[in-house]
Image (cartoon, rainbow, N blue to C red; front, top):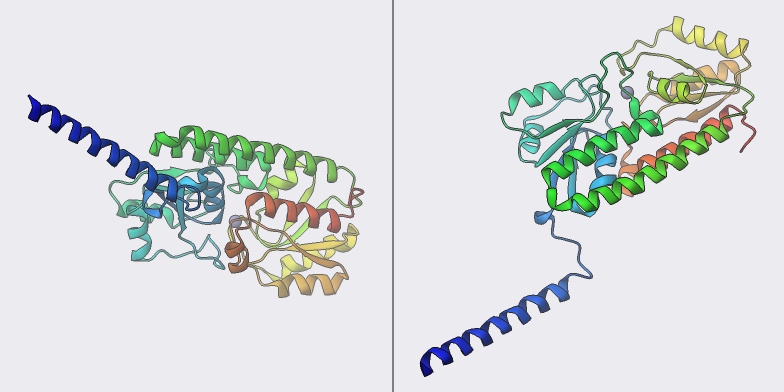
Length: 302
Ligand SMILES: [Zn+2]
């Protein structure tokens, strides 16, 4: 009996010591260090739209890797065997749509058991660049939120809170676009690039003219350039807009010919190395877009 009690006391002391040690260890590492990467959900994003929205909703609980490297345009990216390995090793793979990333179906065909989410538009006849309106981006973020909760149920409250924060940002963004683009000297957005901004123009009552189609493969014919130049002259357009991954010499030619300014618009699907490294968010890009639209269209609110 005596022996048994001694053993129990000894066990209790050991348990208490263990508990103290475990708590001490937790307390020492918790405040300053973020959770180790191994504990985070391993998520793969096709390109920057999926990447930035995953970061927005996933926050500290996810480790996101992006397939299309910064400085590369997403429509004509070519996957490597490494791409397939990265996707098959991840807990969740998020892409936008095969119409934006025609190389995605090939990857999915090569992997038997993959937890994948198509976050883009559900209607096939819709312009796939739905994130170009704030509420389109929110729609994608909502799908991402649901997929994250399904993959990592323990993070439900966290993901819901992050989504709520993003929703507030989107609401404010939508209000700014509506208010600031209400009164402008010109409503024609002439874009020397692909048809990425049609949804944005429609949402805020602007007219959108682009050089090529919804992919980056559209031909930049002399005839199309000449059409744009005629349109700019006839409609007293003040600026032409360009995009990062399309050679700016085309925009420069149009601008020289018509004596207007060149201003960039950001598609978010493309990211420069500098913007990627500094973590430029969806909201940051859209605020830059609004700023440049206000300047180029000569809007009353500056
Ligand atoms: Zn595009």
